[in-house]
Length: 102
Image (tube, rainbow, N blue to C red; front, side):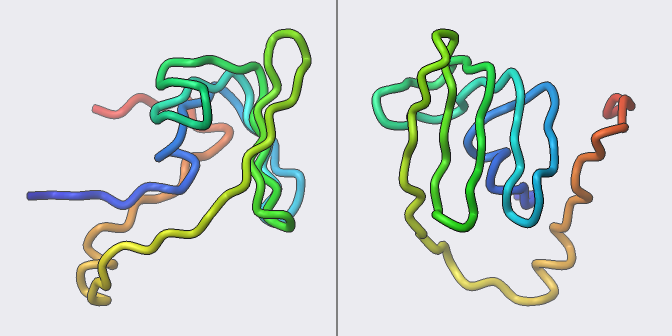
């Protein structure tokens, strides 16, 4: 079984664009949930999502400009070897990258 490691945000939602607002402060646009978040099921769309690393929160702003803020809690998986980590690395998405995966 092959598994590529993906970023935290890619485990929660997809997005069409993003801005880097500083260390651990990315803001994403046109997001669609991949998993349940609070009362919002997978497939729910929001115009904006914002990670706040300083406060360990993730917020979504809906179409009515209402902000829904969630605490982020840490959960760790199994320990992996350095070899497994190196073999499963994925380059981060580039803001300017319009290329399609082949």
